[in-house]
Length: 238
Image (tube, rainbow, N blue to C red; front, top):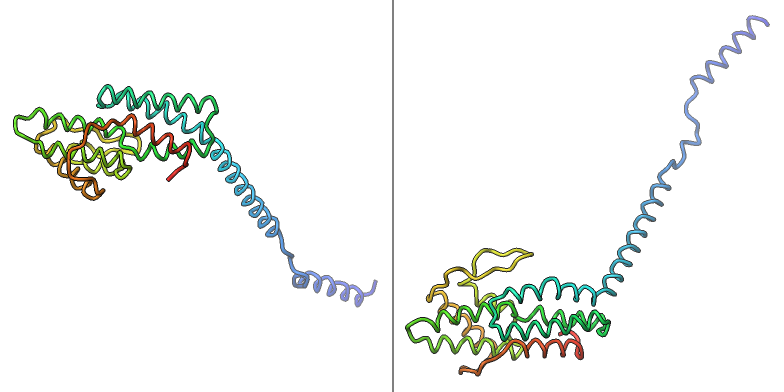
């Protein structure tokens, strides 16, 4: 091979080594696969959420039964409620829980009944009775204050006063801040002045609820619970 051919071949190799990148580029790479994976993951999450929501929706009767037996019934048993009222409420709760266990209640009925029960001042009913006893046991005449308690109960019976209203009424005699898992309890001891403030708050709530300003006969919580359960079964939620 001549010197000229050798030099020409060497120049050709040098030109090849120093050539730039291909005009065709690197292509899309793995980006489409990543985007497709993200989309598929989003669809899977959406389907899972939908199935979970449907499952919980179909399990409302089971959840209500559990709430009654594990939360409400033990709380009523330990409440300050008058023994007769306590027995009546427990009877209604147990009857409803048994009908749930026998699958005699549809999901929409169970949810409606629970919504109505939650609005009732059931545990607060016993707290009101305890505060009322403080005024009855005092030597002074608190007849007007005691009337306000009967008016407040009448407001509950009329479905105009809710658990939140009664909690606000009891604020002067409640201890602690309460949490999501525990309700506030009555302070110890309850003073007469605090009990009178509760009566004053009861009057304000009764006035706002348009309850007549007079004394009412004894009102029991048991029949109120029974009426709300029946309403939930027949009429649904509010």
